[in-house]
Image (cartoon, rainbow, N blue to C red):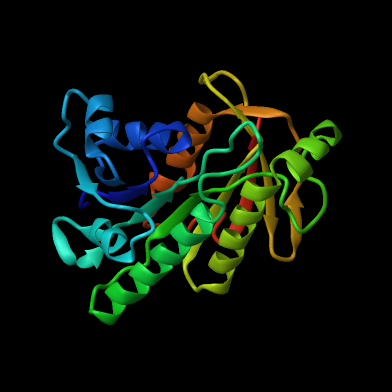
Length: 243
């Protein structure tokens, strides 16, 4: 079997970095797009040979297209794309870029379309870090969190909602990962509960308060990225992750 390849957009921290570390440790070829590669290099001082860093912006479709190419066979695409870019929410609840996710998904979809037009084959599984609180099928957060999600986090949630809608309009393979409120610190012994819904409605309901960034990345690697070349039970669905 050839080595699996995974492209990473937004992996310098949080859920994305957790998934990247596990993918590198498993021996997969990982291509990460970074605005400042030196920041990623500092996180991997051992300089693993299977980690390829490319400088660029995830809103630039040309730069995104470069990380989607399989390094060992540029006529094919990577097996998976881990998308975890997001904006910073300031104390006054404003964002540096309120359209950060929407623009990132647009660049990704554009890059995929351009590559195919240029004869590159492939349909990678796209694993996207989104959020709870934007479901079209009822409340998926604890009642206590409703004011925070619907008022305090209104701007980033609106951005992620548009990004999700644009993926559903596409014909791509994707899984939307909606973590509950994020914390730091892996808790490998703590069960991760999975909420599942499709465009038609909720298939499995789970509501919780918190989960760690490290555990989200671990779940994404184990359940989405590890065998991305196979059909996944969560394709074109949203999965909520919580403890």
